[in-house]
Length: 143
Image (cartoon, rainbow, N blue to C red; front, side, top):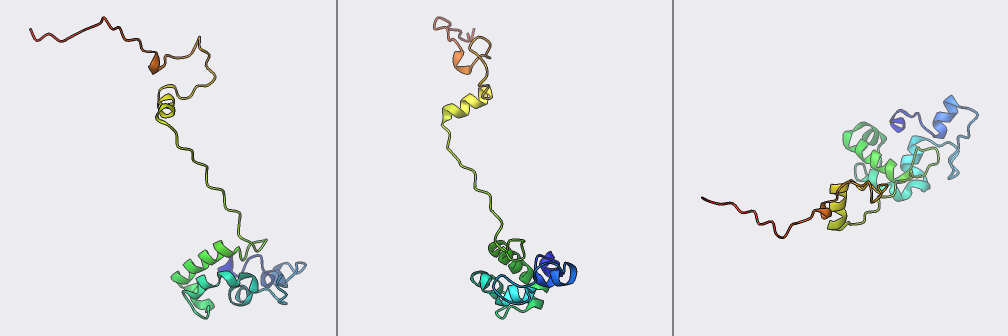
């Protein structure tokens, strides 16, 4: 995890490894650090409660080094988008649209696999095509 190692899209990393990059925080702080993002940056104030559930004063040793702190950090990162290139949450995929299907649609798919390109002349027999002979009265004789 880049946040734990300090290797991420933040000024503190850029100052050491990519000196041509801007190192200040978009909020105006001179150097964007992990501590600044997690404890001070106003951009992430609305999400800090997640970290404070584990450590009220957001102790970095607790947040970065303990299992419950790491779990809270993951939630904080997902909600806030902190430590991403844009500093905003990643786009979440839209949930798929669900349209309930009727029994007829279910049966059609089951029996015909929805082959829409078949013509009437060469289509496979459909379960609804079965012809019932009304004069056929086969019975079982117990003789």
